[in-house]
Amino acid sequence: MKMNEHQRNLRQAAEEAFKESLERLQQSLLLSEEEEEVVEIPKPTPAVTACPQPQPAAPDISLDELEDAVKDIEAFLSHHDIAQGKLL
Image (tube, rainbow, N blue to C red; front, side, top):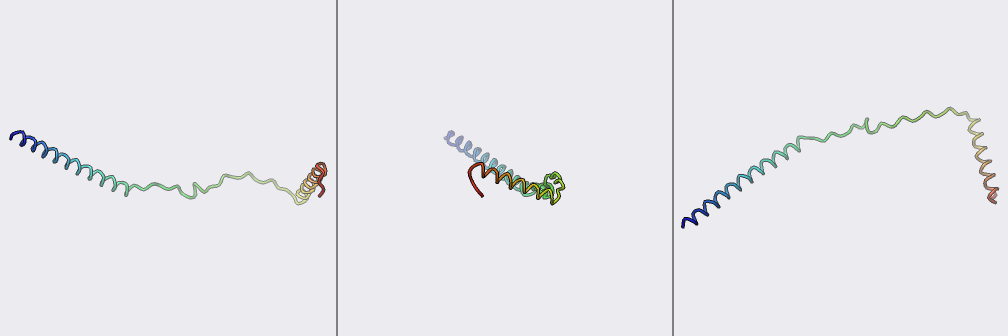
């Protein structure tokens, strides 16, 4: 009968140890949940993320220069199309 009493004592000690470790686990989980609620992930400020890269300044161009450029492009396309046997 001593063996049964010894086994009961071992089972009781194991049960108590299990309950204690379960309580510690629950406490640590509760603490980590509370910490997660308190800690906020910082969000980048819109001014930092929305700041565009500086664009190079566009060169000043006159209306005459622009018209000349258009004429040059039209002449190139016209010549290119004629060279390939296409007519406008």
